[in-house]
Image (cartoon, rainbow, N blue to C red; front, side, top):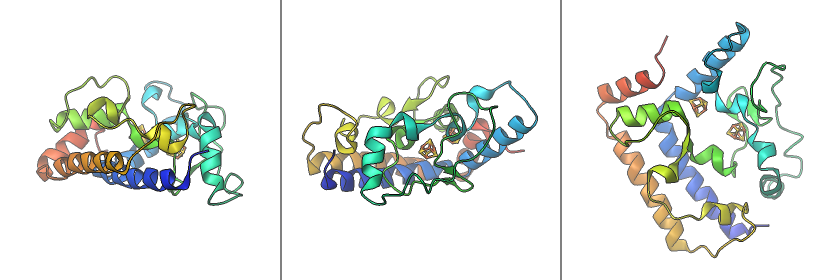
Length: 203
Ligand code: SF4
Ligand code: SF4
C-alpha cells in the first residue's frame, strides 16, 4: 500500500492534469452525448471512438491499488458508485461503474490512465493547435508527448517495485504540466475553436 504523503502528491499532480484537460472544454460531454445517441440508434460504426468511460472499466482494471486508495477516504466508496445500466450494447468491458450523470464520481485518486490518457479526439485537437506532433489513430499517455518524471505508479501504488519519489520530482511534474496547460490556454480563441471542432464537429 502506498503512503499518505505519496497520495497527497498524486492528488497535486491529478489536479494539475485536470486543469490541463479542462482546456478541452465540453469535448467529453459532447462525446458522451454522441455515444449515447449512437447506442440508442443501434449504430455500430465508429464505436472505437465512443466515450472512454462508457466502454472501459478502469475501476476493475486497477482494482487493487484503486480500492486501497479509495478505502482511506470512505469504506463504502464502492457501494456508493452510481453504476449506469447501459445493457449489453457497449464494446469493451464498460460502462465503468464510477460513471455518473455528471461524469466520473471519484473525486480524487482516480486510476492513473483516467488522468493521463489523451484519446484520439484530444490528440486531433492538440495536433490541430500545433501543440504536439504525433499520430492520432490511437490513444497516448501524456508522458508519451512530453518529458515527465516516471513517478505515478510509485505514488499510486500500482507497481510491485515502487521507487523513492522526491518532492523535486513532484514539483517538476506539476510545473511541466502547468506550462503545457498555459500554452494551450494561450491559444487565440478562433484557433482553439477550430481545433476542438476538428476533434469533434459541433452539431
Ligand atoms: S476522453 Fe475522449 S473518448 Fe473519453 S469522453 Fe473525453 S473525448 Fe470522449
Ligand atoms: S474511473 Fe472515472 S474517469 Fe476512469 S473510466 Fe471510470 S468513470 Fe471514467
